[in-house]
Image (tube, rainbow, N blue to C red; front, top):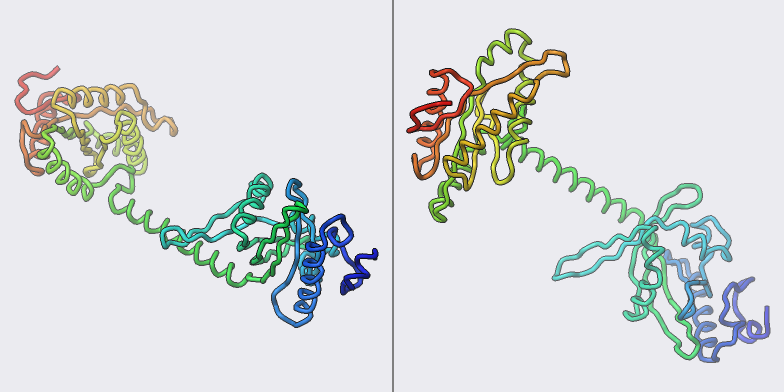
Length: 367
């Protein structure tokens, strides 16, 4: 040990710091030496807290320890002299808890991002004067644990040195419980989202179901009545679908319905949406569409169906056709049931007059 170390009578067999043997002010050296004595005594008290004194130059990236409990080195399975590098390399992430508008939010910084933010974080803690963070750590033997870091920062501008007087606390059980709770909440959220989706979507096609249609259509009627904007419905029924069932079986027919639903979706853009109305019947809801625009959309879907070969993955090469009926709000009706009924009636008129076409109430001729 150097003369300064003899002067300050540093406890312990070795001193791994830099300040006491460096060209620094007596005020800084005295403060560090005093803290080392106090922290050493505290470390011998049997407290579960793990004391440390770290330091860094104002304009340099290197952090070192003026004092560190041997228990800290034991946790990381390294020598005290290797602590700075071992601790840096063992970090998985850094977590800080911030009170934002009376709501505690957790900020997680990954190891990779932490490397880029070290300078900014040191500037931040210097400005705040305190450190309070939790580190997720993995040892060389792949043991994972959490350390809560609480410290105060002291700056010595004349020396260009900052010191951190802190304690580490093992909070593994608490953090594991928090992560378990978070996983449980995320699983519950996903489950709730799944059930909400299942409640309004058709299980086979993925399109909306009639439960959603009736609720959303009632809201659309009220909204359109307030804004004066029109909307239209397309009621479509697959022509001769029974032949597909009889020829290829129910499972393949269900697959054909799934593929047809994909054709419908490919033609639509929000806020338009498709509904699996039942069996081989579908409804397309077109907010903001007048009757002629809805007619063009029905022809678009019909054209896409003609261009698509269904069940090609099983070598069946099925061609599907459909009959389309259109009703519009407010020209044809202003009530939910009547709008659906008129679109259905227009579709049946197509069935009676040759199928594979588009019709709307009041239209005298079909292409």
